[in-house]
Length: 384
Ligand code: FES
Ligand SMILES: [Fe+2]
Image 1 (cartoon, rainbow, N blue to C red):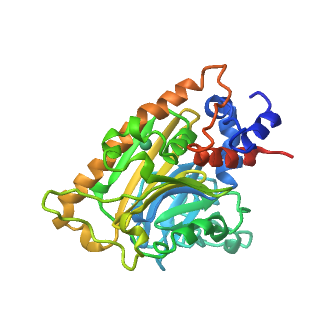
Image 2: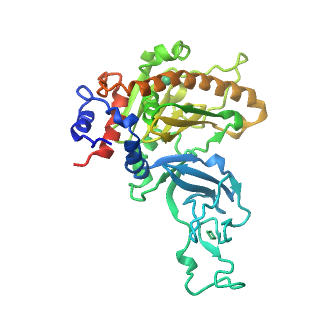
Image 3: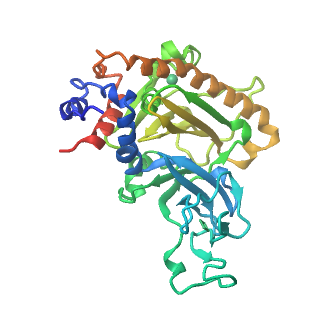
């Protein structure tokens, strides 16, 4: 990796009128990607999945994030917990596949067993055959390594380094902005409300494309026919999140006029507003009066990203068989929009192998959300 050039970072952090975008290496250099795992993903609050995938006590899933094997589990009290997916004895990986623990988390190697809260409960034959204790095996000090985690709007966030500010500080501005949705229960639409894309681009390009509406007329002509460029506004919260909103959200999915129920108690702002926000680093959220979606970006390598898109509704009634066809039509409509974006994020990735590209020139009006994200990323790498 060529040494990070602080003057290039300063150029990114300049005011938008003067700023350059992040240099090519941020999209193409595998060593910089390794560094990013530490400075961007481990030191901040990153998304690793969704609570709906472990709905009942005992449900567990293995997740690899930034190369680290993790285990998400719902404990007896219904709380989601995240552990490093490793046994304290000889370091065996505890689970390979999603599973439901009946009583304990049992290591498949020598059967040490852990409670769902991570406490080491049993250590068979550890003191010799038939002796399940030994004075030098202090179970109290040998629980699973827990990772700091928080669930918000069903998104599981982790702070691997353990030293980020409190989650409520990190996401507080957004919680405030969306206070009318915050704390409301959301109901996942089931199998027909999950979409997945694997795209040949660095994860940051997916963020950048999501948080701007400038491309709408050319990339999303269908969407643009009823939600035009001039109906959109930029959303910028320095060092926290950025995105865009529309003022003409008016869903029409069914010729008979059926529609999804709204979230309760919303103010009139949300009659026609919808907002799309990237919460840095790797989660993108969309709120509408009648549904909510989340995109979890999983960076696979410097040039490959998996996107998990999950659609949620305001009540359980929206998630039954009676609304199944409407949910499927809804997911298909979103799928079309997200599929339209693939060629631009992959095309930008290819463009970043052009050696003369210098990070680009932002529109001081249309690209403020993208610049906000670049500014945040560059800030994670600043050394002085
Ligand atoms: S490695 Fe887990 S019990 Fe031995
Ligand atoms: Fe788009």
